[in-house]
Image (cartoon, rainbow, N blue to C red; front, side, top):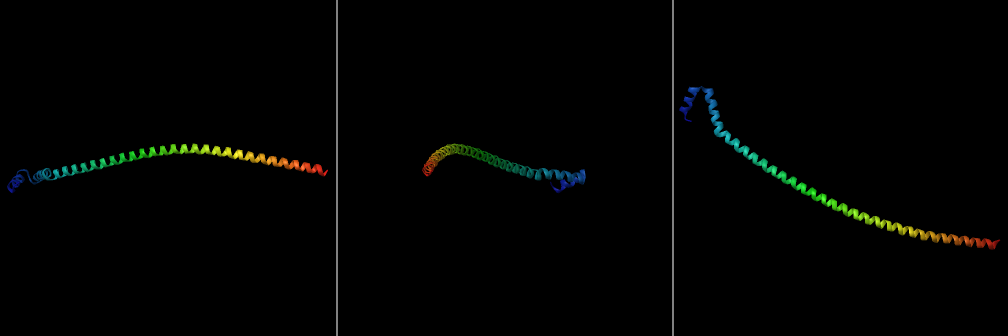
Length: 126
């Protein structure tokens, strides 16, 4: 605007109304485009941040599913190993029981032979 137009505007409407009109025109031509650009930039940043967040959540979900699968496989392996250990433990119990039975039978026979020997000695000494 030229200085004469400003003077005519102030003379026609008064200073306060002319100042408000000037501020409206200034806001429309200078401030509003800046605000629109800034909001678009912030929206773009927000969308990029959101996309990164979604990608991170997806990666976390995939990692969690992978961990779950690995843990399930590990559990299956442990259960298989546990059943193998249980079978081996039962075998060891059977072996120990048979060993104890053999030793017990040998001890019983030895005790019986000692008793018989004592009875024989007692019979001779009488």
